[in-house]
Image 1 (cartoon, rainbow, N blue to C red):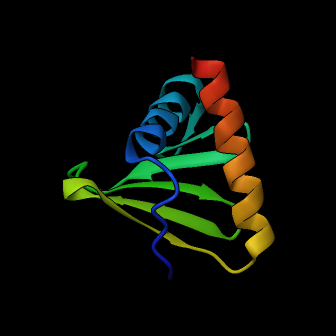
Image 2 (image 1 turned 90 degrees about the horizontal axis):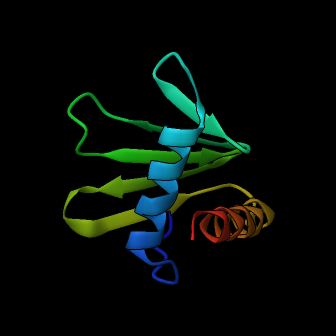
Length: 88
């Protein structure tokens, strides 16, 4: 697991919101343009998923990335930047 401070928390939360409002819902998970979003039972911890990557958005503004392939991380960052451009 690695911590990455190169992505603004506000951007990640905006992507989470976009996926949950624009995406299709299946079994409590949302999916939009290949990115999945879900949260734990109380809503305090939110997750974004893409291929082998899971981003955990923790309470008090912390977040962590867990992934197997650097290429997945790079592709995820490209995808979220495209989503942010759509949202603005």
